[in-house]
Length: 215
Ligand SMILES: [Fe+2]
Image (cartoon, rainbow, N blue to C red; front, side, top):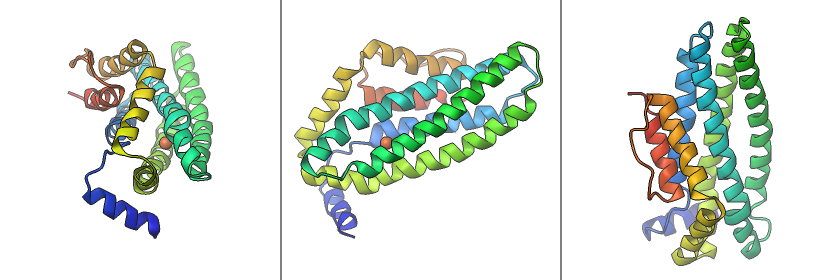
C-alpha cells in the first residue's frame, strides 16, 4: 500500500525510470523468440539454426541484465534498505533455473536437428515452455517497475540513479554488448538494420528489441 502511494507520488514528479528502456528491449526480445519458435518448421535444419541463434542471443542478454540488476541496482538498494532487494534476487535465481533448462532444450533441438533427427516434438515443447517462461519474466519485470522502482526513487536522487546506470555501462565491455545486440538484429532480419554505435546499454537493449521485429 505504501509502495503504491510512493509510486503515484514519484510518477507525477517525472523521476528517472530505471527499468524503462532495458525492459522494453527485453520484452521485445522475448516476443521475437516466441514468434519465431511458433513459425519454425522443425523439419528444416536452417530454420532450427535461426531459432537457436536468436534464442542464445536473447539468453545472453537476459543473463547480462539480471547480473546488472543484482550487482548494481539491487546491491545499492540493499545498502539503503536492507531486505528490499531479496524478492527480486530470488526471482532472478528462479528465472535462471528455468532459463538454463530452456537453453539445454534448445541446444538439444539444434544438435539433434543437425544430426538429421526428428525434433518436432521437442520443438513444440520449447514453444510451450518459452511461453510459460515469458509469462513469468513479464510478471517479474512489471513487479520491478511497480514495486522496486518506487523504492529506488525513495532512496536515491535522479543523479544517483544516473550513477547506477554509469556503473552498469562501465562493468560491461560496450563492444561485447553491442555485438550481441547487433547479432540479434541479424538473426531476425538477415541484416543489421540499425547501428548500435554510440548507444548506452539501455538504449542498445531497446534498439535490439526494435531490430527483432520481423520485416
Ligand atoms: Fe530483474
